[in-house]
Image (tube, rainbow, N blue to C red; front, top):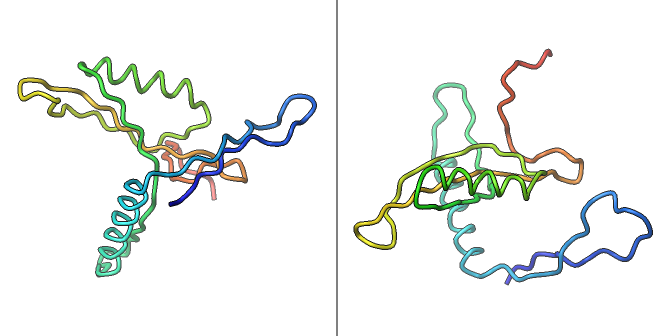
Length: 136
């Protein structure tokens, strides 16, 4: 089983320059297996491609946060509330969908946020559109 190191750091006097890591929790085997299968399938598809238009195709693993509510406004509010709790998160994509609920006559709304968090350099690990072209 894969483990995530979330143990607290050694005691430090004064404020910490960054949040202390959390304790070690095992990642459920289902999640590890699903991620391994999905990345393997995506990588196999890329390897079998013939690039015809001078582009590039890569495979990346991002975290997807899914917020669900009975209304679109509720799902968007849940996503906004999550963002308040994760100010370091960089949002790369957002998708709103109406999906079948747990009963045949019920619909739910989901907001899926594709996010990453800063790496050791302090920069987010994913691609984000910034609107203006950078001056080269």
